[in-house]
Amino acid sequence: MSADVVGRHMPAVVTLDDLAQMMAADEHHRYEISPEGVLSIMPPAGYSHAIIATRLTVWLAAAGVAVERIAQAVGLRISGRSGGVGGRIPDLVVWSKPQADGIWLSAADVLLVVEIVSPASEGIDLVTKRNEYAAAGIPQYWIIDQDVAQTVTLHQLQGDRYAPRATMPLAWLLNTEPAEHDLI
Image 1: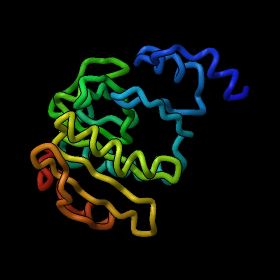
Image 2: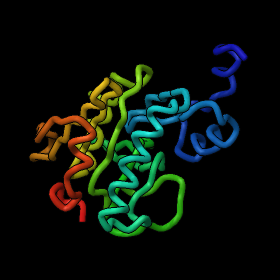
Image 3: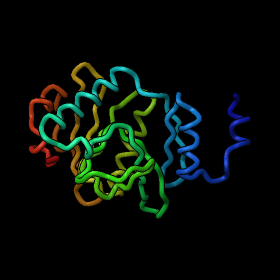
Image 4: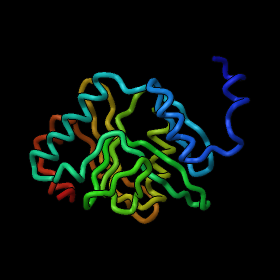
């Protein structure tokens, strides 16, 4: 199907409900929308990406973070500084308490979002999402590169922006305790 055909069938304003329907109909892409209404369509994550997310999940659970507080690739409702509402799907989310079931969950109780950088999402992960998550008041934002070391950059919210707190290989991070990062 061409972009022209898809464009003719798109609503003038795409809502989070529209995104949920699009994802249900298309298992080959992930759909997100910024609070300003910019639609992003990404291919599914690759194997290496999934293994990194799984390693983090196992690390958190083994250290005592309740599995009901950890989720991979779940939708977050993100309010923007301009008042718009968007939907983002971080690679990993850690909440302060278990959440009710839903497709687009509130960012209110989120302690940490993790984005594993893929070539298709690099600009969005490194700039756009960082600003949106900061505006939503999420205390921590970790970015993981898929380089040889799987470099992790930990960002801490300071005011209305993230400041880098530390950068290290994923293997080093996994030898720390989640409590050292205010996740328990």
